[in-house]
Image (cartoon, rainbow, N blue to C red; front, side, top):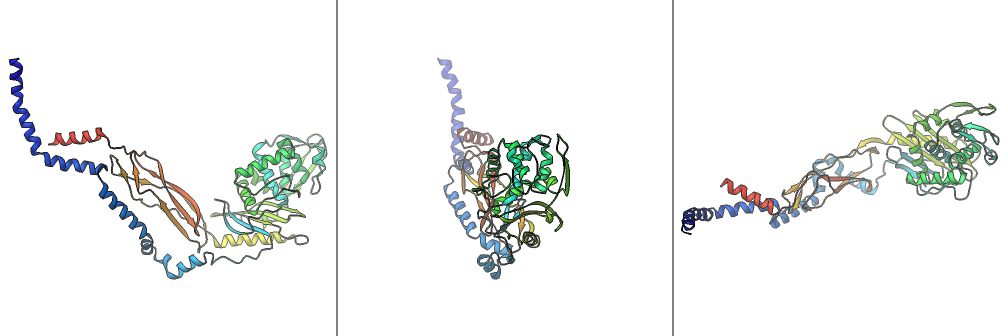
Length: 443
């Protein structure tokens, strides 16, 4: 017992010295501890309010800032032009078609339309979908046996006979170069099991492509109740189809010779698409005519800096067979002349976001993208950054916490996600203890 008292007696001077040291350093400890908490966001209310206030002021003065860095875009003349008449440079296209549309095939953005969203009959331009569905669901060396129903289809015909057999690949040339209606049905029955089954496949593909105002009933485009599309939907379908190499190979072939398999009856088909020879870079696509639809044509041009799709529906009736060509050339010329490729993505350095209760005070943000598209000189581009003013710890890296919204002529064109760059843990007892322990060891 006495030894124990002697041992405690020896420790008393050390304990007293420790208490004296802690008392002397109290103010320094308090100041440093407050700094730790402030840097971590625990007691940062006043500063947080200041950050919020500054961000709001920055947003309010964004337009003034843009006027400084882009003075030519904010002259009184340009402002009035952009707000009151965003299409002031739009050429007055004089077209004959009841429905017409021009599409940028790189992003399916509509560049021009007149009644382009009206439901219309589309005649044999239907066969664009017939061809692409076939290419994606069957092999070209498959053998097609002609049914009596297919053989009875009205003009235009290859005049195939019941029971004859052909390679599917050969029939695609007959379908697309000369638009044979009997061949379209033979293909549909082979690929879809029936015309109705194939129409379901066509409609499923249309929905997959975002064509909500289209309904296929026949594979050949003959007039039928409930068989319709819009110029916009048809352009989107063509935009998709021309990305298939075999589709382009077939539709750009000038002529093709093939034989029936069993008896060797020979056939020769030649391309009836005159547009292929009318303009530089023409690559398609398909003509059409019925009593309900009138003359129709879907065209495509591929240049070094742009790929355009044109659609004209209801473009005259006999004898005005050539109007579809003149309308198509007018649309394509307008697109080539007035639209230039521009990069609208801005590689900006985004301000970090304050993190409540975070072991780090701010979270860095990243934004990446590539938004090249065709624009007219008079079209306006506006970018809005939708980012929260604060985040709550914990925060995970590569989390989408905001968006960069790109508007063209005040219409939303695209949204790009804004991501966090690093993990930030929530402040806890262990974090505070380590900070104080580090301070103590330094002292």
